[in-house]
Image (cartoon, rainbow, N blue to C red):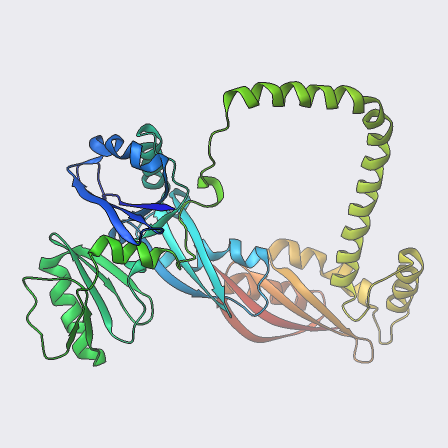
Length: 393
């Protein structure tokens, strides 16, 4: 099998490096440099007989590691853009967030502008090159306890021991890397000749591989592919097969239409019933957190409501909440959790509000209704405040 690796440029005018390697013959078949992406179609012949891997300049994206909550759900993964928003200079709605392999509670993330990713995909497609793998170039450097450094013309690729990467022109990258090495007392692993390199005392040199061959080898073990999700690349099907596929699909639809008409209504009713029951279970759990999964919803609700209505003290929980309705509405305070102590006629409410003034407004309104109100700890949560309020009847 042959493998073709292509390192794309940050702009359409940047040079493009490439290399073809034969796994069977264990040797480099061809390699070279294109002046810009307009010459990319010249690699079309190589790409037809090779597995193609493309590399993206690390300077065109933002690489970071995100620590997730234990046993994070899909909802937590979808919140990743907001977790790194403050580290980015761009609007996250215009960014695509590619996810690498999750190791424990950590996951590697690459944030890149959607327009940039779309441009690379279109460039490859226009050149007639099928590639469904796009990896940040510096990430393909070998893992090491040292700082790995590689030069491609005047550009320097750098990978740190914690897998953080940078890439850019040698004039600013080399001084930056030298300072980081001094601060963290790290050695260097220099993987290609760098004319400007001066620190030989703390450097291990290894020029066994051509830069593009070294990057190709490293790309095989990188789990972070930028072409994923909405940017996943699929090979175009044979046009002849597409025609037969349409005909076959129509035939299957014609044979199954009667069955679908008879069963669709029943399936819709079952789905609606299941959804409603699920919503009821969620609401019951919110209102009565001490209950386990409820089998007979009507009987359990009747029993719990009766308990609340017959609660001890001067006022029941339902009566207190009913009277506090106006205070909640006028202040904009929203209860998140409610705990009721029937012996003390006391409700402990974990609440969220827009600001501290809203919590104070709720306290005054509740006191004007004859309730005793105590405020517990109040904390900021983003643009909102969260506080514990104790109300006694």
